[in-house]
Amino acid sequence: MDEQALNSLEKIRQQFDVAPYPRIPLEDYPNDMKYLTLYNIVTAYYLRYKKVVETQERVILDAGCGSGFKSLALAVANPGAKIVGIDLSEESVKLAKERLKYHGIKNVDFYPLSIYDLPKLGIEFHYIHCDDTLYLLPDIVTGLQAMKSVLKAEGIIRANLHSLRARIDVFAAQEMFRLMGLMDENPQELEIELVRETMKALKDNVLLKANTWRPEFDRNEERILMNYLFQGDRGYTIPEMFSALKAADLEFVSMVNWPQWDLMDLFKEPDDLPMFLGISLPNLTVEERLHLFELLHPIHRLLDFWCAHPNTSAPPSPVAEWTDEDWRGVQVYMHPSLRVPEVKQQMYACAIDLKMFEIGRYLAFAKDPTLLIDSTLTAMLLPLLEETQSIPSLVQNWLQVRPLHPVTLDPIHEQAAFQSVKQLLISLEQIGFVLLEQVSSQN
Image (cartoon, rainbow, N blue to C red; front, side, top):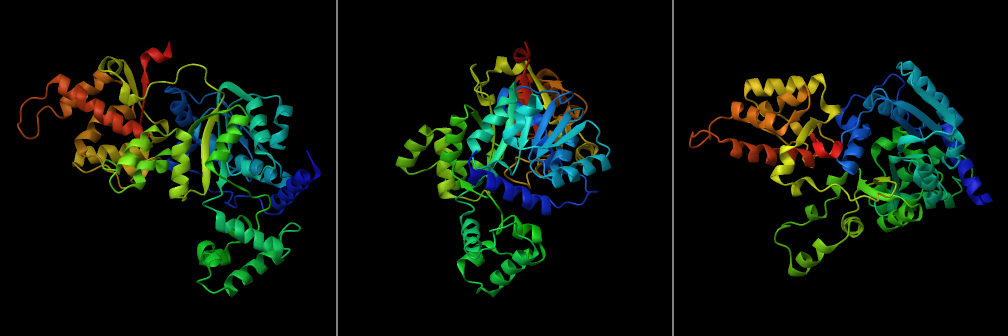
């Protein structure tokens, strides 16, 4: 590593030694189901392999663990897993240890270590979580290669990069404060106050202020440090992200918040596009579609993605392409992060009181947080709260809950119920409420 890269890492270490991130109180506990669904490794494994895995005895790395709140979230979201955290900052590691001890999490180890030095641990991981860290490395390809070297054959990495296009004004602000000499050394109280004074002195219609400054930043040192004075911060584009994955010999799996990257959502009438778009868009690669999205609508601070070792076998067929025969052998799971008392109570109450179930409030991947399903559909899904269900069992439950056609009052036939159950599960699988596993995939 050259001297410039070493100096960059040292500045980053110093900044996080003085101001460990995130500044979340020690006693705070992650209990938001949307948040925990993201941290549950079942989500990533299902997207990659269309299989539902157990979290028991899995080994998970939090690469760039900071003050340990995300390590805690990984422990809560993955019962029975072993958590290992590393961070360049020794002060951050101390806080992480203290946090996990406070919450009684025992199956966890922390080390003051650079991602580049991961092979020194001598541990292989089922899952690597590298959140808000990779973009700080002087060489992201080397960082990805280091994580790949300790990743099990079927393991998955979650990592992300700051978006150059979404954060372009923040990078301009950093350059300004760099020119002012505020980032020559580790920024502290004096530099933070000078940022405050500068931003407040600007007219409100000055674009840099209008696009980056928020009134609450005046009282939030962490937001100032992690934006205006962030040492080592860099921005990347979708092509650069894919180029880095290719150079590291890693395969792109999915964007973590994939529903929010749907290119067709950017058009007023996606089913009635101009001829040129209607012909060209369906032929774009995944990379091209994501790149076009970021060019048209750069709203995502992070290019947040899952990747893995290149898969030499054919990828699982999409659920929408399954035949009726495929469906009859499917096992249906409710996402494990949602099988909790709060969801159970709400679903039972909606089914009994004939109320709509606010399913969107519990889903990390729903485009519409106000998404509702009616009481009869909710009642049909109740068995999933207790255990995995086969398609035939759900069809029989459907026939009991909705035995008659609501308009004609004719009896519902089994084949019609089967088609209705199938369509419901397809829509729920797309938003992560249910996971569908073909029995043959277990062999």
